[in-house]
Image (cartoon, rainbow, N blue to C red; front, side, top):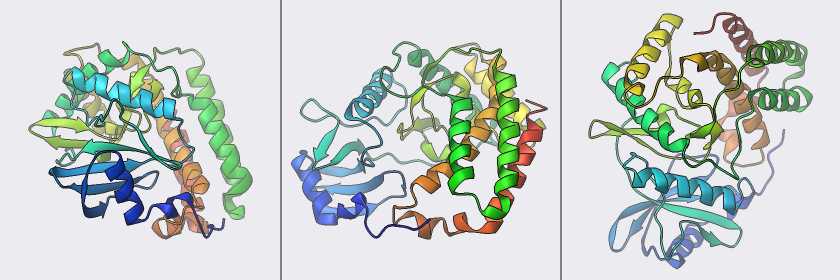
Length: 323
């Protein structure tokens, strides 16, 4: 893979972005600080008449305006019901602004730290908050945003990687293990049909700010229709026994508002495999973005793909002993 010399995000010079933010009605004081984000470009922008705001410039052509606005509307719907979500700021009747080919949104700055997943109080509170979210998520189904397709997503991503990306020394092993994974996942999920709702979609600790004894959720960029477990499994870590304990604590909080979906634990390992394989496909598809090669230099190494084959083989064995 070779990175291209130019990319649409190259147009986002400081002056360009400040002019765009000013034109949307958020008068800047000239201060601009880039924040950690690869899929989009996110900046803290100082304001003349108040605290700084967070501005997200969306990656061109990933989402349609309709899809972004539907996610915004759901965020605002949650916030109106006192869910701790950092929703976009509306100005002049809209939450989505444009400058040339770029769409962008503005958010209030929110502080906090990541939740402590080893802290049962944090986990129980996360369970309660997710149950409240999921109650709202079943009330207002998405019409334009994606629906989770575990098997199809694994198949599409693994085929792309096998054909074009994986180091040739490991391509055969990668094809074999992903083929076995697909067969096993299809068998496990064939008899299940879980209810779908609007979920966060990328509910890991990097997208949760803990403050005032409560989680606050940010970045709904991957929000989609999926079973509730999509928002639960990424809060698990450690060995099998530790994850079982974490599930019990999450369930204790979740049960305050909704019955915990214990029947969906069969999804945990397939969802984890989907994330592992999709992540590699995402890196490969974004390699023309100049921000990616220096940030992920190991991605093109032979050793990386050897380690990925080993990881997938381990996860395949985990499919035999679900939580």
